[in-house]
Length: 391
Image (cartoon, rainbow, N blue to C red):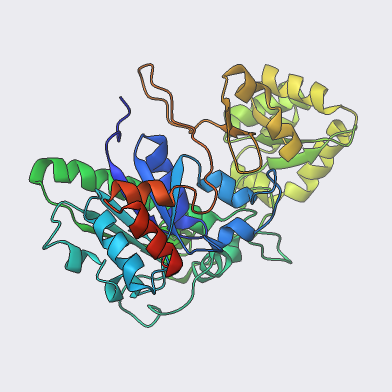
C-alpha cells in the first residue's frame, strides 16, 4: 500500500507550482482531482505541443490525476465543488489571491464544517504586505528574490533555465502537506498552509544573503564556474567537448597537479583556494594548454584516477539516454491524450513491492461524468449541468 493511498486531494491549480506539488502527492498514492475551466483548462496545457501534442510542462506535472471541468462562476458548478471538497483530505490552490475565500473554500470557511481538511494556499507573495495582490510568475520571483542578480556572467545576469521559483514553492507545499497530514493523525484537525513563492526562493538564497551580510559585496556572477572556488566549472577539451570538474581543497589540488596536469611542481606554487582564485586567469592558461591536447574521454580518465569530481556537460539528448538512469531502470511509460511517452520514476525510493502509480496525463474533463456520478448526480442531473455549461 502506498503511503497516501486512500487520501483525496482536490486541486484548483494552474501553471507549475501547485501542479508540481500535487503530482508528488499522486506519486505517493493519493487520488488527485484536478478542477479545470471548461473548454480551455489549465493554461499550461497550451504552452507547447512537444509531447505527442501535449505541452511539455503539463505532461511533466500532471500524470496520475483526474480532470474535472467546472465553471466556478456558475452556482451549480460551485455546488459540485463544495460537495467534493467536503470529502477531501487536502485542498491545494494557486488561484488569484482571495479567489477561494470568495467561493467559501478558504480554510476559515471550511474548518467549521470539515475540521480535518488541510488547505494549502500557494501564492506569489503571501497574504498581507504591499505585494499581496501583485501578479507573480516564475521569472518575476527569480528577479525579486535576487536570484537573477547572482546568476549568469559578469556582463549579463540570467534567470535559471527552468521554473526554479515554481519548483521551490511546489516542493515546500508538498512537504508541508505531508507534515500537516502527520499532525492531523495526532490531533484529528487539519490546518491552513500558506506557501509564498518569494519566501521559498528567499530561503534558497541563504548563501548569497549571508555572503553579503552587513553590506559586504555580493558574489560575482561566474557563469557555469564557481564564484569562490578554482578550478571549478567547465573546461573545453581538444575534441571540442566540455568536461566540468571541481577541486575543493589543497589535497585535491595536489592530486590534480600530479595526475591530471602531470606538473607536480605547480602544487606548492598555488596552494590555498584564495591564492588560486586570485591567479585564476594565469591558471586557466596552464590548464587549457593541457586540456586542449586531450579528448574529453582522456581527461575524464585522468580525473577519475586522481579522484577529482567531474561530469560531462550534457544536453537534453544525452539525458534521455544517460547510462546511469538506464542501468537503474528509472524509465517508465505513461499515457497522454496523444499516445504513450517515456517518463522518469519519482526520485523517492520506498521499500516494498508497490511501484509509484505512473498513471496517464488526463484529457481535459476526462473524468467529469464519473466524478459527478460518484457525488450522487444522476444522468439527468449531469445533462442539466452540461446544458447550463456548469461543467
